Image (cartoon, rainbow, N blue to C red; front, side, top):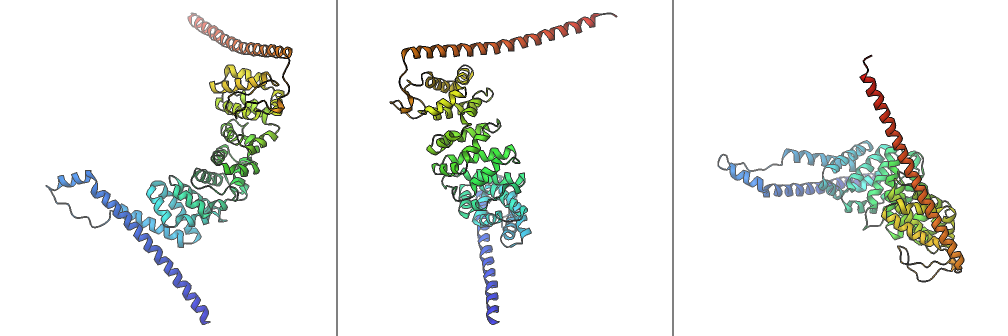
Length: 436
């Protein structure tokens, strides 16, 4: 009986000691913050001139107390941090909402809150089963991460990546947006690498992007996060193993998401694992060729041509797939109507398809080589070479005729519209001139 009383009394004294240390620390931090503000206030040249001008009228009294607004701000901050550390579940949720507001207004407050141990408590709240408490903590962490690499590193070291939800479908759109924005902010941290392989980051991102119930805006945020993760070479293997290539290939055909998906694929295809995963996907050449026809998306055309160049380089099997998918007519059209960059890449691809068995790779954006690959085959005969040249000329003529027909049709439509407008104008004006 006496031992239980001793243990309970020791736990009470331990809690009191923790509170005492906490309030001592927060008072010292707030005091240093107030003194720095006071020094800035006294050293301001405008205030010094104003005081000098007013000395002839009334001597200013010595300021011995803090301004009311500073007192209110410090009181609110002190009460909020106290509730977050020692309050109930409901008080913790309200404190997280208040921290989000305070962190949005002042950058110095974000740093001060990190020093008061706010980040650790918020990270623990992210793993809560209570939805309101979870999303309040996520939103507060988003604001605390803005413009502060130190806070981002502290969140990563505290284990925020292990607190992500395992089932995306149970989250509403607001919660999905919150987690996606937090991961995007953390992925921009280059000094400290996120534990991509050993955490729930990739599973959350892939499930969110593959879910039909996720809106386009949230998928855009996830794609931007994937793009940041692709910059780190150590993340390539976990990305490929978690199905990032297949997910990006499915999203690149959605025009609102295509540019970001193709940008990430462009970073993955230059690695051995990424290129192999794309070569094993049967729909890749056909889908990329389809994107080359998007005249209203020049950036997507450029990304698509680049990926096709990397895949086709010294790969006879890939060039054969592209040829069967009808890449040559599309490339001819792009060389006439595309942007300067996509025209340059299309011309390079056409050179590779022009004489498949006798081409030698020259300088280009891919790896340099001075020898023909073993899969290139034997040289062509002069007769076959002439037939190839004739075929290329015919393809160019067909493409030109096609473009001329398109231009002519557009011109005829415009002429018909003008004729209809003129006819209606004559009828309207002649009817107005009648007296009966």
